[in-house]
Each structure stands twice: as structure tokens, then as C-alpha cells.
Image 1: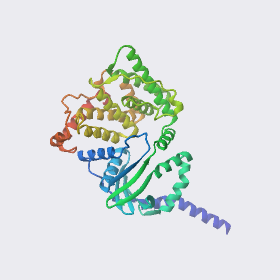
Image 2: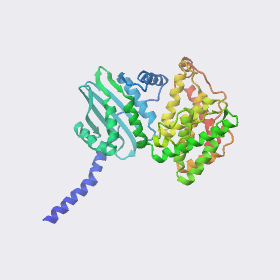
Image 3: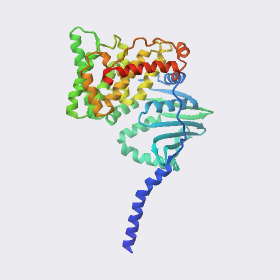
Image 4: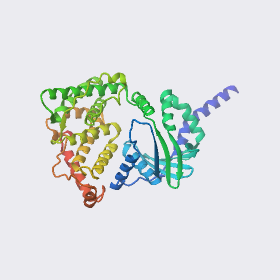
Length: 436
């Protein structure tokens, strides 16, 4: 009898281990999306996102202050849809937010590779506002619905396990900074207590959590190498030089380091991030621990140019740095965002700048696409003699286009006129020796 009970228990256990994931898959995967793919970003939508960012950015990042935020359901969906679609490369995610006092409904569709069961996973998270604070009411994945109390208990248990207790506490403190949440009509309003001290502590903990110690060492290595190169050029009386004079020895260094680390992708990632930070005139203090920051040599800056222009270097390597850090979609969007911003009273929309953005992204994609591609890029860039080997020509590309001129001439980003110029830029990038 005892043997029968034990065998039965083991059988049910094995069936449970095997069948539960299968049942979950059958219940979670759907043939139809709950949220459809949004259309391509428009000129006016990029402009609107820019306005929202400016409106809700603190006047002074270093001063504690309360920020009053009021954002419509339409703007929430705009930021969510294009934030996810532009910033996440590997997975197609389509969110939708609906406000219905006192609930916030967040529906999300994740597109997965085609299966016999379908190619979508639909989720629905419902937040309920109680006394000015949003609480998880329920989460649904496919046919399965989990109550908020269970989710909250699981997070409170696993949170300190997945994160260090101090980091978990900091995360909760930042979540608690969102206060007085309310829904009025189709508008969400809340107050955010901007506390730079807590944010700084969270950011410091993020360094060790998100940036591995060995990657911090790589950033320091390439930063110091770049500083020494600039110092040598300055000693020779050179104030401005073609960027090829700098990237060639740096990629040679990356090639040598890859022979030791056996990881050319990570070497290229650190190198492109270093060049991006150099163009932004930002040090490593925000990315390495205080102990490691003591190893960083004081920066030396000189003017680096592409086709005789320093602005193109910034576009190229900042886009490359964003691409290896956050994905090529984010980098494309950041470049587009900058050009739309310039079209409103700045230097104007520039297809030459956009060409530099796109070329930087192409370099980043190849430099981190695979170990084989990463090694090939290192060899090509280490042997580069002229900048046209990795930066396309910019002659006859329209520049200085103001917003009204842009809309009159190109209508929008999906217009035929705009696409023709983008296709020309793509052809020029493809003709560069490094990308062949």
C-alpha cells in the first residue's frame, strides 16, 4: 500500500512538472493580438514626445522638488507605444493604456515566433488607485488570472532575493515618491517627489547591478587610452584632427584585447561607449564605482571631425554608443528626435546629421552582432586610412530645414520624398568599405 501511494505521488508529481508548463503554454499563447502594431512614428508625434519630456523634466536635477504631472490617456499611449517600440530591439511589444477611475488598465501584446498555438502572448495588468496610491489589482496572461494580493506577496518575497536588500529598499523609496495619483476623465495626474539623494544612491547601486566590474575595467582602459591619444596630439600642437586618427589605434587596441579576453563583442561595446561619452564630454563617474573611478586619468579633449565637421562625429558615435547600450531602435529614435528638435528654431532638420546617425548605428550593429562580425570590424577599423571607409558622403543631402519647410517638402516620415532621401543615405552607407 505504501509503495502504491509513493508511486502514485511520484507519478502525479512528474505529470505536474510536465503538464503545468504545457497547460500554461496552451493558455498563454494566442492566435490574435489584443493590441495591434501601431503605425510608424510621425513628425508631429516626435514633436509631442519632445514637448512632454521638456514639460516634466525638473528645473534643477540636483534640487529636491515636487513635480506635478498631468498627462492624458492619449499621451500615455503615445509615450508607451513608441517608448517600447523604439527602445526594445529584440522583442516586438505593443502596449495600450486605458483610464477608468479608479482603474488603470494596461494591456500588452508580445509577438513571438510562429507556433502551432499562435504567435502572440496577451497580458493585462489592472492597477487600482486606493487613497492616491496605485495597487496591483490583477494580472492576466492568456487564460490565467492572478490576483493582486498574490502578486504583491510574491514581489515582497522575491524582491529582496533578486535584488540586494538595500537596492530593493531604494527601489521602493522611488516608487513611494509617486504620490496623490488620481484619474479625472481621460487624464492621469500625480505628484512626484524628486529626491536627488535617493536617486543618486539608486544610480550608484545600479553601477554594480547592471555594469559588471570587468566591463567597468574595459571602460576605464579605453577611456585612458583615448585620453593619452588626445594628450599626444595636443603636445604636437594639434587642436582638431580627423576622427580616423583616433579610432584606428583604439580599434587596434580592441583587437589586441580581444586576443586576451576572447570576447570582441564586449571589447567593441566598451570602445563605442567610450567614444560616445567623449563626444558628450561626460566622464565615467556615472558608470563606474568610486573605487574604480580613481584609476581614470583626467580627460584631455581635442576637436574630432568627420568631413571637416565636429557635429558629425557626435552624431556618429553618440548613435553608436546608444545602439550598443540600448539597441539600434533607440539610437534611430534619438537621432530623429534630435533632428525634429533642431527643426524648431535650432539648426534645422539635417539629412547629413541623419546619415551620421545611421552610419554610427550600422557600425554598432556589425561591431556587436556576433564574435565573427566583431572581429572583422576591429580589423577593418584598425586598418582604416580615410574616414570615407566608415562615414558616407554628405554632399547634396538637404540640411537646415525648418519644421514648416519639412512638412511642406516631405509631408512626413513615411512620405515618398522622405523615403527617397533615406534610401540614398542607405546606399551611401552600403558603399562604405567597412560595411561591405
